[in-house]
Amino acid sequence: MARRDAVGRLALYGACAPVLAFLLLPSLVIVPMALTKGQMIQFPPIWISVHSFTDYLGDPQWFDSTVLSFQVAALAVAIGCVTGSAAAVALHGRRFPGKGLVTGAIMAPIVVPLVVFALGGYLVFARLHMVGGWVAIGLLHGMLVTPYVFISVQTSLQAALNPLLVRSARSLGAGRLSVLRHVVWPAIRPGVLAGGVLGFAVSFDEVVVALFLQGPQTVTLPVRMFTAIQFELTPKVAASASLFLALSVLVLLAQGVAMRRRGAA
Amino acid sequence: MAAHTIRTFAVLRSPAWLLLPVGLLYGALALLPIGVILRLGLTDGGAPLRSVLRSPLLLRAAENTVVISLLTTIFAVLLGALLAVAVWRAGPALRSLLWACILLPFWTGVLIKNFAWASLLQDNGVVNALLLGLGLTDHPLTLLHTRFAVIVGMVHYVLPYAVFPIFTALRAIDPLLERAARSLGAAPRWVVWWVILPLIVPGISNAALLVFIVSCGFFITPVILGAPSDMMIANLIDYYVHDVVDFDAAGALSLLILAAIAGLIVAQQVLPREGQHGAA
Image 1 (cartoon, chains in turn green, blue):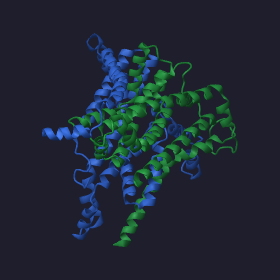
Image 2: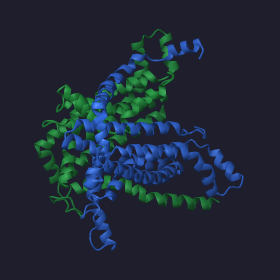
Image 3: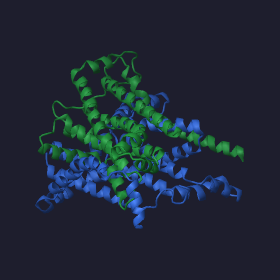
């Protein structure tokens, strides 16, 4: 029986290996492709040169787009951390009819197609003469970031904040703000941090909203890449893609740290 | 609920004004825009909606969207179930490694992944080099800008979305059930067929719906990896906005998408929930 189990296990992992290769392959090829000496992306690459990285950072348009993307993501994370954390705290330990509906509404930006928000945002911001400004992109990205922070904070609240703690703090004379500062904040801090990092990646990668709200001065890095990829596959795009890859590794690490801390709590 | 219980909760709960920021943000950037879209799409007694519904472009895009999303869902759920079972059966160290492999692509943006696939699938890319090297073909195959490439890129994107619900359903299974079935004389494959599989059906159907909903909204992948004839419904909205500059038609189309998504989400609520049979 034990031997048959081992054979089954081997078959299972044997079947998984190609799927894992399929999952990882795209992430693994980006950096090697950026290191080619050639002007086009090809296989095998002509190693080894960092000209693609200097091309990317030396191009003022691409450099400005990178800075703009950081700016937009920072605003989006700031907004998303406030809205997402506040909503998670408000719903924690509360039971009321329709709570599922409220949670569903907060999570909606994940399932509603981005193009609908992009069009709607364009129509609203056009009336306010805000299309073509980075604030409009940051605001809309703030909404896209909210569900990620919400989920992350909700998880850390469930792990670390017994609603009874709030009650005892209150009964010992702490005011509402004092409870938020000394009881709730320490419990949600890891969740806010992890959610903020996830949210940063969400905003930094986003193309569709940024494409609809772009102006001559506000082309984010993903929009610039999206436009470039449609014409040709250059090592310069691979170089900027390496930056995104580094970011997703960072997100993964942040998530791992948050999970470990949650496990320890 | 008795009156005193409500009062207990009143002491425990956090202030309701904490929902205000999210309400304001979503109100201004989701509800208000949807209101504007509704007004645009339904002007002149729904004339834009009627003209969009009659457009041959819509039929083409809708057909593409359904066919591509269904194929993506089938592949993603099959591969996702395989990965979920592997993670479920793995020991702690292997489990962390598998999660890392699944989550790294999950947190990489769609644009980066599509760019990588475009480079892999192009005529002088890795995949063609491999096929030529193995002697499976004597000339590079056209893989990029085909429906095949779109489905590869989309399955790669949505695969983690398929793993999560199936894994949650597997984790909720009481391990004693399997032992009980085995001790009563069931062969391992019958345990899988009669015990495990019925328990994870809700997880699988949730995964399929989630993947299908996410797939229907794809915009980037058909542009980068597909041919112009692979245009999906989101690309059609972009076409109406940026090429035809007809916001009424774009609004009408958005309404159709929202209605379809709402229908699917209602279906998801009606379907049996995860953990219903297990230890949850």
